[in-house]
Image (tube, rainbow, N blue to C red):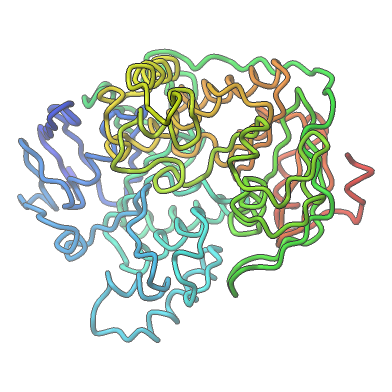
Length: 506
């Protein structure tokens, strides 16, 4: 029998309000790609943090190559050969990409050597990034690329990946899988967390399923179907979406020749973007992260007010110079891709985070009706099945997927006339993703105009009526969902579309 590279025995981790892991045992062999599958809040991230040394278990033991170890911190984990790519990134905003990567590497290397290594690895794996950029200028997708490159530069014996493909094109995912399969063939063990069941079935040859912090199943995912994996994970198959075609109504959002120069040297110029979203339709914008999505969304939300008034119109009124508050008064609501920091204040409770975009519980004279606020938060928690310790639970205490459900629920509950959503189901389990997508379609059916910006093509094909692609600050013509293919959209993500004017496609 081959000695496992990593063996966990009876791991338990308790927090004041929840048992994150309960009697979890797991073994990973050399060269094995092992999936850890579970819904949001199942305990996956806590278990990975225990392996990586950033969380200490209350009970249980860890064996590394058959020898007991006590990994007290990530530095000791890296010394053993364990690297991890977190779903919530551990990067310093004020440092450059190269400086962030340098922090976790051998101090015998110079910054220039690390910069050169980053460029080489990025080219090898198709993860385009400039090592000189400061992290605060990066999109979420670009930050994820930095984390992946940083992990690969350590030449790990065990590589932990938490949702690594959420910001990659289908072609880039294929290339990453080639790299991961090569790493596994060379003896590297991989722990792989993803809510994309088809990825797990293609890449992984072992799987441990968690539900409520406990192991509920072990299988070879290549012998399973998406439906059977879903049932093991959430106890049932996710509900099928009913996407019925319907005629769109009047134009709600119209963008006319939007041009915005980049605000920093690493940004993207918005170059003559034009499109429209009508009442009762969902329009999607696909693209590889860092191609102008961030700049476009800032202009649409009102955080960037440099656009001419007439270049962004809502119900025929030029709003290019308006801030977020007057746009919300017109019925425009926005879900940003950054959950913590823009979507929610980490240290505030969920109820108080409602007031970032809602004023329902504010009474005359500025008084806050705390009972009404708590009731509103509880309603959203219940409706969207958010796993939290109540309306006063701090935003940072929720798993990424549960916080996403709350933020999306907050904006949907406001009955918007135009909802702009970035990465609606990033890092969300299949059951919750189906629910969020179903809610977006329900909004559409009620007459709301919905704009979805996402790197997840499966998501866009499920919920959108029409699709655009953004590449290098330019927007493709629109294509009807029924006429589009994954291959076509994947090619367009590289900027390869016909020189057809957007107006004729719209």
